[in-house]
Length: 134
Image 1 (tube, rainbow, N blue to C red):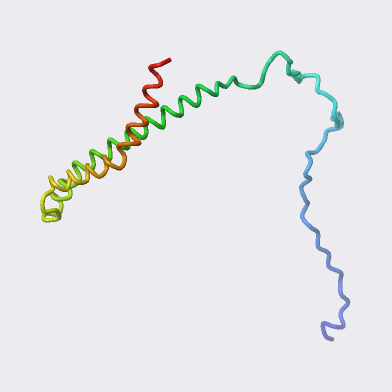
Image 2 (image 1 turned 60 degrees about the vertical axis):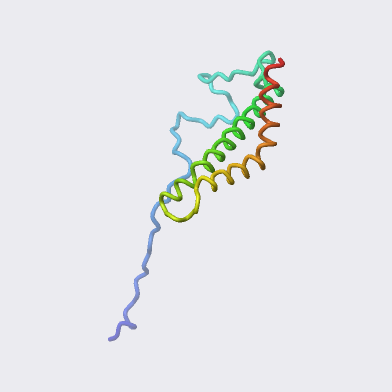
């Protein structure tokens, strides 16, 4: 007798239980669709309250202009300082880089002041003087 001659018993497999996406409801719980709960009070917005924040456009623009002027001033003065000190620092780290660090610093400071001096004077004269006239 071979295994093919034996009667086969049906095999059954059961899938594991799948969790419901909704929580199980107790018999006393009934679904309330669009019904307000008595313990939750919804505050209606009043027409007297405004949800916008007051905004002063002129003050904001003036503040932005002053901030830009201050940043440009700081960057300009930092560049001038760097051009005056930079050749000496580089000459100290790598000797013989510049033949004369004093002449190099003078040339760099003249170049930076010539290029950025005009816009710097305009910004300082216009934006910082404007605050005194008010």
